[in-house]
Image 1: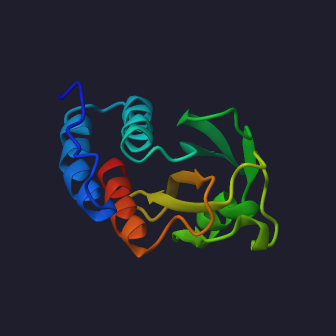
Image 2: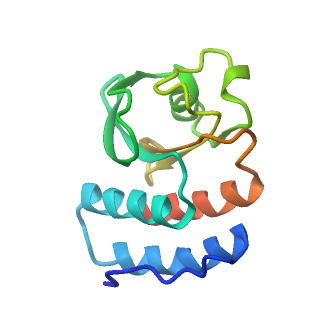
Length: 158
């Protein structure tokens, strides 16, 4: 397991993801504990991209419960279908939000959050285990490149 990331700071977003993905794969490979892997992935994404907030919510009964994260304190529980995370969970698909103030029912854990992407982690039976939630304090900060690579990251964890 690598103990530090090797990412070129001047690289483009896609180049950073391309470099980060195999490093995340090496980081989680052979580690069976989901919480440990989620914690390291949240740290790796935060360190590489300096997003405002990076973390995971774990499915527990009828709620998403806060898991490992990097950033300011966050909402502890989110109901199915509520907010961006709850929608990604209920729809079992990535939700990309350019402006959180325009998203109906957005849950404002922090007023500094401006854009968001949420990727569900789906197990082999088709059930959502967790969601990866990333917030930016910049409007329209996420695009198809983020979606493509973050879905690959989540697949490594599912």
